[in-house]
Length: 230
Image (cartoon, rainbow, N blue to C red; front, top):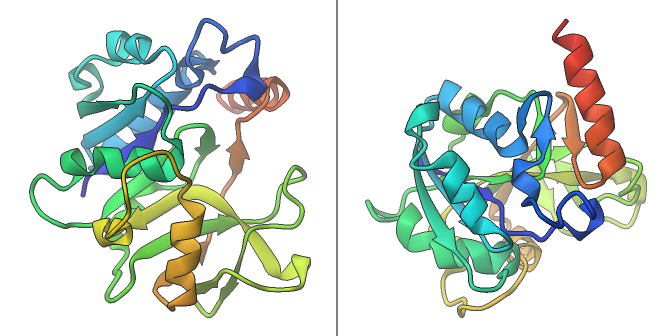
C-alpha cells in the first residue's frame, strides 16, 4: 500500500510560524511534524509515499529529499496553487496508482497521533470506496462531522453528540474520484456522496490525536511529547 501525506496548505492559523516555513516542517519534539508521520509509516511497512506541496514546497523537497535517509521512497506532487484536499489527491493520483487501482492511505499532514498506522493495512474495503477513522470531538469542532453506526459512516445525524470528528486518516479507493474534474475542491463532499451510497466504513480511533492547527496546540503537543519521552 502507498500513502499520501497532504502537505500543501498555507497554514494561515499558524502564522507567523509559517510565514517562512511550510507547516509540515514546523519542529515538534526535535524533528519536523511531517517526519513523525514518515517514521510511523515506515515502521508500519508503508514506504512508498507521495507528498503534495504548494506553499514553500521547495523547502520540503530540500529537507526530505527522496526519503531514503528515513527509509522511505518519496515522490512529490507540486501544485502551482493549493488545490485543497480533494483536488490535491486527484492531481497526485497518477503517482498513487501507477501500478494499478489499489487503495492508498491518506494522512492529513497537520495532525499527530500515536495510532499504529499498520492498522490501515488490515482494512478490507470490499465494496466500499473509503474507510475513515473518527475521533471524539475536540473543543474546536464540538458538533463533529460524521456519524458512526455499526462500522458504517453516515453523513447525516441530527444529534451533535452522536457525531464524531474526521481524524484526517483514511484509506481511499481511486474510484472515489471517478468523473471528478481537475481543479481545487475539498474531499468532504466526495466522502459524503459515498456515505450516502452506503460505501464508507469507519473506525473509532481512541488513541491520542491532535489537530496541530494553531501555535498553542503545537506548543502543548511539543511539551507533552518531550515530557513523555523523559
